[in-house]
Image 1: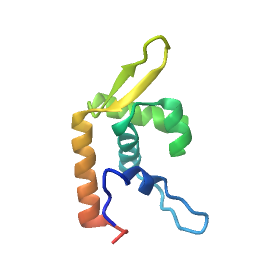
Image 2: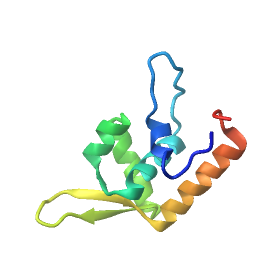
Image 3: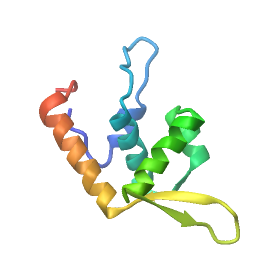
Image 4: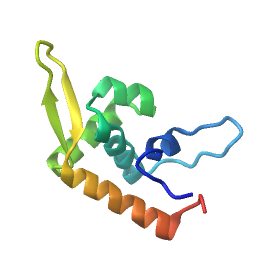
Amino acid sequence: MTVTATNELQVYLRKSRFQFTPRRTRYDIWAQILASCKQEEKTQSWLLSKLGLSSAKVKESLTFLLSAELMETVESTGIALTKFKTTKKGQEALSTYHLLVDRYFSIYQ
């Protein structure tokens, strides 16, 4: 199965109690966060709840992604709420990640 822009988040979020789900590497987590924030800005709380990550893991990942300029913060007007958005560089990194996984490590073939 090739991951496309329309279903990349669905592939990450697909879970079943009867299906083996391997542990996520840090690269998988970074890709999930980048994919989640690609189309629409997301808050840290959204990432915590929807991606099933711990608070420490989200903070660590966001710190890395922001320092690598793969993500940026977007300040909301009127509300003191920080949202995160994938940058152009982050979108390129995500595409490269998917290309490598599909070509060499895909379990969906």
